[in-house]
Image 1 (cartoon, rainbow, N blue to C red):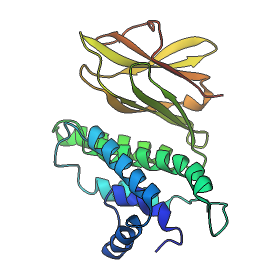
Image 2: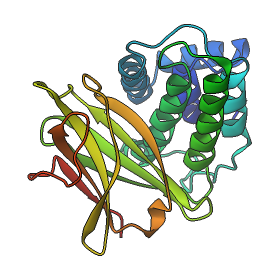
Image 3: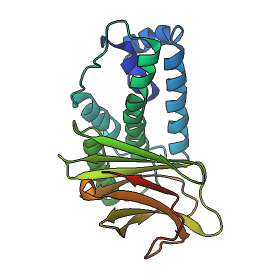
Length: 239
């Protein structure tokens, strides 16, 4: 059992606790309002990301992802034994982002339609790469709201020489429009991929992302555009 029971909220939301830990955390939730709110938020995000998912993930994928998360060293919180409510509130946003990202990893693994084994194997490799970036010891997060509602989060890892753009929009664009992701280097945008019509969430792996100055999100005509259309839905500065 971890010494900081608050840190179990992410695993609790992912249903990754054993029976003893879950029982202990259930008791903790009766007394900790902030953990109840955080658990509700993580479950809501998980539910939104899971929309349209299929029910049979590749074998052992969930266990592999959770094992990778468990093996990642976590620096202990540098707070006194009796942390004030104000200080605890300041610590939790970073932890929440880490576990929302972990939820995205697991849920993306069970997302999409059924495919042949070769495509499933490709998905497994992608999700392993995604997990490796999001759980890297040097991962850095940046976040900006979308003009149309929702958020875009960008995780970068110098050690992995890659990053992940996590889009979580309130709704998908209508009228044949799609969200498109961009990296910006020396003021020049390059497409990092477009979502499908009707899609509002995505976790996109981008090689060499730490070298970019910024990440942008636009709304474009489907299937995608060669150049971004103003105004930007969001611009995330990475410097």
